[in-house]
Length: 250
Image (cartoon, rainbow, N blue to C red; front, side):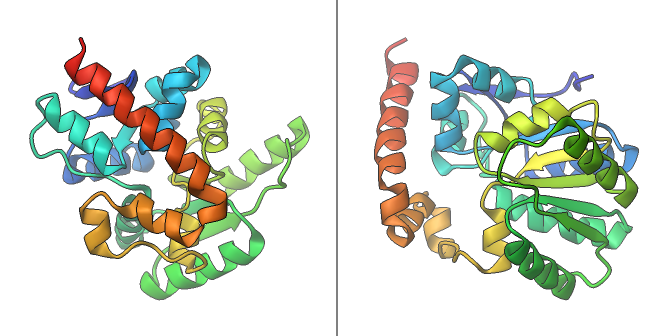
């Protein structure tokens, strides 16, 4: 059941939560302690543009138990809709803050996705930063799992005692996986995208001044131009056009 106090805005048809950092952390940890089966989407420009073009994917975003405004433009759109001071709540920052709180409370976490090499470095760095953190990691095959393989993965998550499952399968795969597993995984599933790579140190994150000024996308583009140029050219353009239409051409 969704909380009656949930406040949301509309960004290109995607339902995004207007929420503070403190409220987001408290709500997520409350679900985690209760082992509620929930899923959380972290919504940047790429996610909301993808949702605007794919009705099935939009339904997944709009049915999430929480959808945070990751990209600075997404948070800006919420502020334009009357949610003054709405901050970015990004995947890497949310994951780090939750790991700190989970370590303090003795609440286990599970990291699902990415490669064995990245997960090994991620686990090493998380344990160095939070020695009391209880965590398990799993790199699933880069293919569709059989029903038996999927059931075994769910069983491993449950056996770990995790209250939070960080899912790093990439967009849109991670959102689809979480939606398919709500009601089966007794934990809060949070799709954190590239957070595993950032915290493992395999991909360098943008400097804080770029993140604070909505330029994290530019840093990623400059870091991986061949892979990301088309994505950012197309999605950023579509976002600007869609935002202008939503705000000024009603």
